[in-house]
Image (cartoon, rainbow, N blue to C red; front, side, top):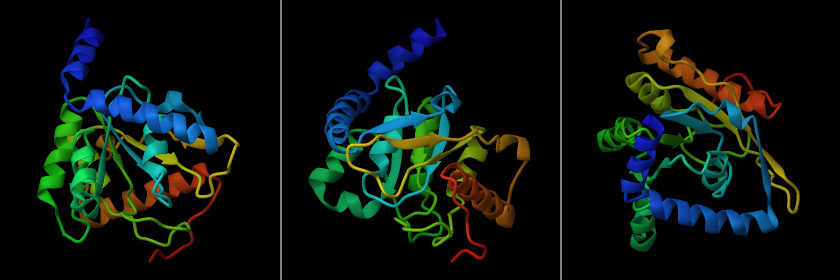
Length: 216
C-alpha cells in the first residue's frame, strides 16, 4: 500500500512526467554511440538519498540519471549559468533541476530546493567538485552534499562515471556503498570537509584510481 501511495505521488509531480520522457529520448540517443552498463545498481537505497559523482563531461548528469531506476525521480543541482539561456532554464526547471550559485558561500535558495527534493522522497544528484575536472584531486570538493545529507538524515551514495567514454562499448557506471552520514553525529566545519574528501576518495576508488595528496 505504501508503494502504491508513492507511485501516486510521483504521478502528481508535474516535473516527473517530462523527466521520464526526456530521460527516455536522451537514453536512446546515447545508447547508439556511447552505451553503458550499471554496476551494483542494487546498492542504491530505496527512497531519498544524495547521489554524488565525479564530473568531467557535460554528459555526466545523463549517465547519473540512467543509473537511477525509472520509478525514481533524480533531481539535479546545476550551476546557475545554465539557466541564463531561458529555453534551457525552462526545460531544466520542468524536469526538477534547480540552480545553485557556486560563488556564494551559502546559497540558501539552492539549499531549500535540495531539502524539498528529499522531503518529497526523491533522489538528489550533486557533483561535489562543483565543476568539470579532468583528473582526480584537481578540485577541492564542496561540503554541501554532506551537509544536506546530514540535515535530512539520508545516505550519501558515491558513483563513478568514466572520464573517457568509449564509442560503441558499454561504459561502466559504478555505484558504491551508501554512506550513513547520520551515524557520524553532528558534523561541523573541518569535519564536513573531511567527509567530503573521503567521499571523493570513495568515488575515485570505484574507478580504481587514487586521489593525489594535497587537493587544490
